[in-house]
Image (cartoon, rainbow, N blue to C red; front, side, top):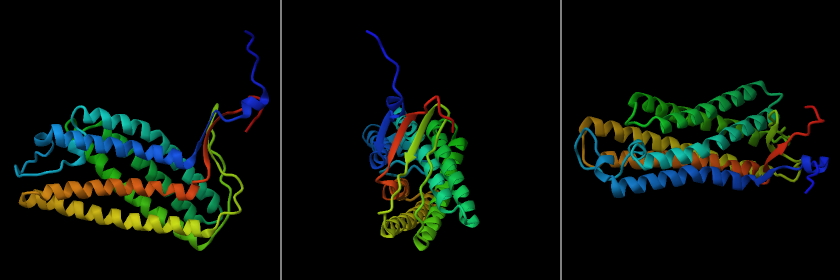
Amino acid sequence: MLHLPYSSLDRDRPLIKIPFNIFVIGMLLLPVIGLILSLFISIVYHFEDANYTHCHVANYLPSISAAISRVPELYIWRFCIGLHSAPRFLLAATYFGFYRGRFVANLPELLLSWLAFLCNLAENCALLLLTYVASTEIYTVHKAGFLTFIVSSQLYMLITCRLWYVIKSHYVNKEVNSTSFDAVRFSIRFANDRTRFPCQELNSYRWKVRLLLFNLSCCVAAAYFFRRHNKHCETGVYTLFALFEYLVVFSNMAFHTTSILDFGKKSVMVAVLPEDKRY
């Protein structure tokens, strides 16, 4: 059978086109499912080991580090985060392009956009570090990854809320350019969208602020119970630390889910660049 070469029309069509809301939901379900499975297996099959601390007191929930440091939880979590990480870098680049389009004439916000991008990259890299270096392998490296994740994620959320406060206050309708690579283009296509109202951005901003405040509150509570456990070795206090640690992680995931409010009607595309075109 004779295989004819692709026509220019076929070649210009996207190889993959995924609605942005489906893309984000799938991306964030991976760590949610991985964490829930790891916690379930740890509690059911590794309860004593996962809840052991130097205080030798009763605890009822394992910390995330303890839950993902044993087999098979370790492999489940690494598999889910491995699949989750690449789209997260794409999302970071997408937001950076979006902010550059919005704040092209505003130097302070443009600098904050760069800082938000760097914090987002640091958060993703720290997540990979604490995932692939378990606390039972090299504790100091795992701890450094965890602390970097917490600090960079909260800085990112804080800066993002500031940028969206500016967007809410000064509504500008801009089109964001695609992100392209040499041979294959991964892009978020932003068509001219003149029917989009400021109330959508206001809703996104409000949810971001709520989740930021909730995340900070849970982080403070987790730090308090962790310190109290180490100082007084009280029964069940480490369980409260673990519970608030879960809420910190889940609220972080929920914060990133607000990107659906920002780009929900857009699509993620994978397309081959035509050879006879130059960009």
